[in-house]
Image (tube, rainbow, N blue to C red; front, side, top):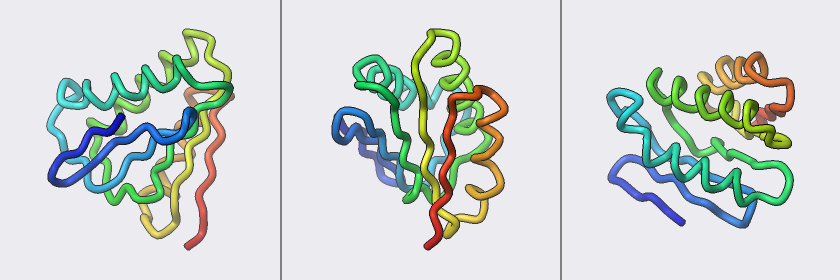
Amino acid sequence: MKLEHENYSAELIENNTVRLSGTFRLQGKEHYLEIMSLLENAIKSADGALTIDLTDLNFLNSSGISSLSIFIIQAREAGHKKIKIIGSDKHSWQAKSLKNFQKLWKNIEVEVRTS
């Protein structure tokens, strides 16, 4: 499954990986519902851990970070096994922000790759 728009895309690749790329500047959490639905379907069908690949995500605004936080909390409460988030240090916001997701759930693994 792939959601493609002018400035961003969200894609389920393989069975256990969702890749978000581009620039997400959607206004309000309600505009992230389509992406949230993709993530929810991916975690329900994943064998084991779900990986969220953000290495090509240039920007995620506060509504997007909030939506991703809600997804993580819902996954925790539903008893899912684990989520791994992969980022890149080529996007300075990722090195700072992604580690905060670990505060929401101990089963979050964050890997920030060096470019």
